[in-house]
Length: 362
Image (cartoon, rainbow, N blue to C red; front, side, top):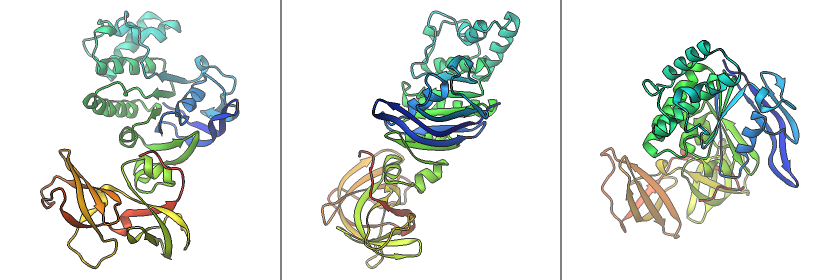
């Protein structure tokens, strides 16, 4: 079974540069936790700190309540799956899975039994005698998982292990990984820059930016109620509009913007007169025939991009502001075409205003 991992005021400094700064997060035993963020944000540094490849400059890392400072990677209750998997290509599947057990001096009979159980767990029936070089990408992923689990880690660390796979196989392996984690009860700490991967697989997600942990929450809260401008702009597609708060009404705010007055949720309880950013998800923008309702925008259709299950529509407001709308391909949306003039709107419950801050690149 898994153990909890507790990062307390953890910082990692290289000279004057902080790869991670003041990180506080408690990962529950048996949880599937993902660190999500762009390249260079510090998420892999955190994984290396938990694994024991280096100690933090400041703070504490505890696994199962025990301080890990000074304890090397070989003596921690962790195992790691690297992005390149680091399998032995000339060994068979069985030899790869059992390698860690052999190094630890586990008797052969016990080793064989353990390997057979892991082959069953990761669904590698019939390929135990094959060389790793003869396997598909998905089979290699399973071998890496089985080899890591062979040494009975309490915490499994995964550094973007699916990034080299094609889209269809990546989708399949997400489900496989989640299933394996649930069946074993091992704590998974997963590193990724892929938002969909993090949202679909994780119990909770920690979003990182430039060494800082911006928000930790369950996936639907991360998406629907982001805590900062960075989280709102990095996780999922969004329309961003600058404005000034003209008035506040309970949990909502009314704003003056270049495209007219708009109303939306005000989760940070911003005050009248503050400059802020409105975030509107493309899937919450919809066509309307209303002529006198809040949040009405007159636009022309600039581009249409059909993507199967939905169409992405690029809109241009009368003030030359570009917005994105997503229409489901369910037969209910009216037929529209490029250069057509339309009126769109969004419900104020489905948009939110946040303090101006660093946003992810578009």
